[in-house]
Amino acid sequence: MSSWVPSSDRIQPYIDVLVEYYSDCDIYVGVNPSDFANEWIQKLMDTGLSIKCRVTEPSMVIKQHASAVQTALQLYKESDTEYDLVHYIHTKGISYTKQIVKNPAFMDYYLGYAKKIGGIKDFMKEHPKYGGWADFGMLQTQWFKGKFYDKNAPKLNEWMAQSVENATEDVHEYWDWSRFYPFKYKPLRTQWLTGFYTIRHEIMKEFIDKCTDDFLYGNVEKMGFDMYFFETQIAQVVCRQGYLRYTDTLWDHHEHNDPIGGKDKEKEYMDLWVKENELNITREDYA
Image (cartoon, helix red, strand yellow):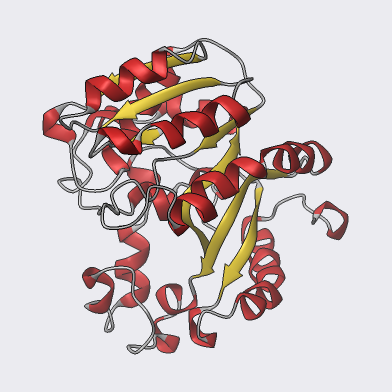
């Protein structure tokens, strides 16, 4: 869990969801510094759940939750416990201080994902070739195919908008996690969004035990990435180890964020990825 707390009155609803939906989990909480970090940690410990917390080192802290994800993963790596699944969650909506505490971001993402945990566990048992499950994702057509790049398509950040001329080469290098771990396979041409997802423990543990130190302890922005580092690209850990990954709602930016258009094309991208990597995945393996 990645967290940041701007006020006392926003703590309890996030605690309540952990107690109701994650009581059977070990919970590793990365805490970005704030005036209310100690209060947040104390209330987490008071739940009686299996929780370990750590405050992010100042040199690592960036805006949004990426640096606190790194801190949570430090705790996860230090554990020698074997799990089935690793769930990634964060205090989505807590920074929207002009909105009510249980705002749409809290309800749709933080609480919404928690309500799906049982179904996610069932899915991962039923589909062994899938290494991960996510709520939302997006096709990467305009980033992996320069000639189809649409300068009017929605962009995740300013950097993308500057990559029209060499989109394929520049963006592939930008998102290449091989700097952290010698992955065997090429990436799948879709990405996850929102920062709520599940990955099989054996996949995550293999990566996190052998990745370079800067992945866990380096400043994300100084490494050349941005605040969406974990929100969008953690899915590479799944596909670049040879596993399919599931995305519940997949948008296609060339179809005005139409989730139906994205799902229609998803199989095409998966088939291409299986062929490129010569994987032993058949039609029967798809969900």
